[in-house]
Amino acid sequence: MKGMHPLYWDREVHSEYEKMMSNFKEKFGHDASVHLMRDEVGLYHLNVMCAFIKKLKGDELNVLEIGSYTGQSTRIFSEYFKNVVSVDPFGKSNVLSDIDDFKEEEESEGDEMDVKIKFSKEQDVIRFIFKNNVVEIVDNVTHYEMTSDDFFLKYKDQKKFDFIYIDGDHRYSQQIRDYTNALKFLKSGGIVGGHDFKWESTQKVIAEMDFSKKPMFHLMDDSFLVVGEELL
Ligand SMILES: C[S@@+](CC[C@H](N)C(=O)[O-])C[C@H]1O[C@@H](n2cnc3c(N)ncnc32)[C@H](O)[C@@H]1O
Image 1 (cartoon, rainbow, N blue to C red):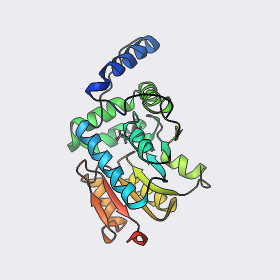
Image 2 (cartoon, rainbow, N blue to C red):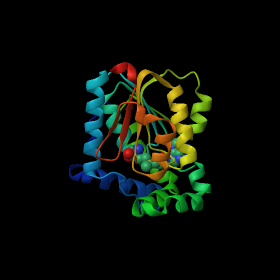
Image 3 (cartoon, rainbow, N blue to C red):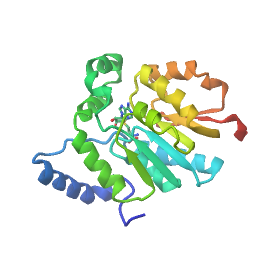
């Protein structure tokens, strides 16, 4: 840990948040309209998920996260595990250029998607908050500001991971690539998982990857985990 800082945003960190937002205004000349993707309950469940993984595999884990957004989940992973690699283009992905397609596919998701689309345009804001939430606080996170496709292509020699969590571009076409690539970067007996289990696109991927034949856990924040058979 590089210093004292609240773990993530909640009531106690409000003043930190205000400070950060006023720094933002100074830097960019306008207010940052950033919301939280996960509420406190969601963050609680993410902690539960990490505690569960730690129980199964210990804490000396190398973790890869696809889709970090403002770094709330990244920060939690960094608190539980040894090394975290985070990959997010902060809005530069094709989610941006293909926004209509994305919107149409996920229209039924309502508010959360509106937020995602709106924020995907605010690359500077997201980078700024990620830096405040993660980079300046913990020293066991390496961030790659690029798409998952670029990461998997460029970092083929990357050490294999014990746990890979996918919460990036949720379109089926991207998710299927992410999970397929993730399995190549996963240690034998590792755990792969992601968010938004109930989404149609995610369900399609789960069916196609035959994940239901493996031990699977569905968590209350709609995350899910698929555990390598060798563990059992
Ligand atoms: C739902 S948010 C992640 C939320 C975060 N995991 C959390 O729990 O706080 C999705 C993120 O995926 C990122 N993303 C979109 N397309 C991506 C891609 N092709 N590769 C990696 N990340 C991507 C977006 O920039 C966005 O920050």
